[in-house]
Length: 288
Image (cartoon, rainbow, N blue to C red):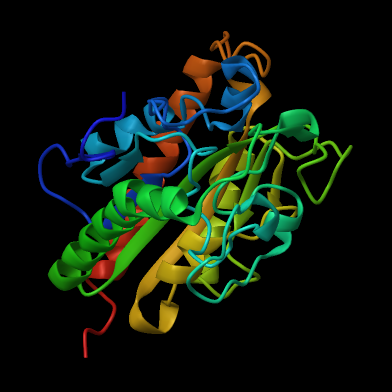
């Protein structure tokens, strides 16, 4: 069953800082109307399983965390509302569509394919079904994230946003980099347009110091959430962070392994470094 609302807002422990994290793909509550054709184990490969839990320590440092509870394959909060795959529709969509390359790969706003290129449904979907998912999941999640960012920006004059994800160790057929081994951590700032370059550099340096291989904007530059919220000229900074799943879990079973705890400790240390970074800039950046 899917809870209402379909997200959880984790408040900071103690005084808040201008740091907001969100985990749009770690939802594990599967709605009754999600009549996917493949077995659930295959559908769950779309999840960023455990990501919200890995970052949960950030609230102890004053950050706010928005966690999606709905599954990514049901509706993807990191896609634009017009990124609808026409091949999935049983009837006409009432508004203009702009399917992206993600839809072409079968992973647009609503996934047409599961991992391995397996059809997600044994039928096409009515437009009213997708619109109901938008109203139930996509919009409330986006509103919750926008509210948290606006609150911190109003209080501090700037806000820093981390969009939290995980990725397969090797690109698959639903990716732009099929067959390619990936770095441990991929940072996406849409080629330096969604946050202060110093923020990206701090995160990269901190994770490299911890022993991880870090890539920037390769293969992931950041999609809808950082595009919407990353406006550095308005002192709104957004950075997407992708973590290789094999660092902390078995990709097939989704079970955490011995690497989970060390990774979580290193993420906690990263948040400490970020907290110092945003604190300094929140109180030194001009507010007018």
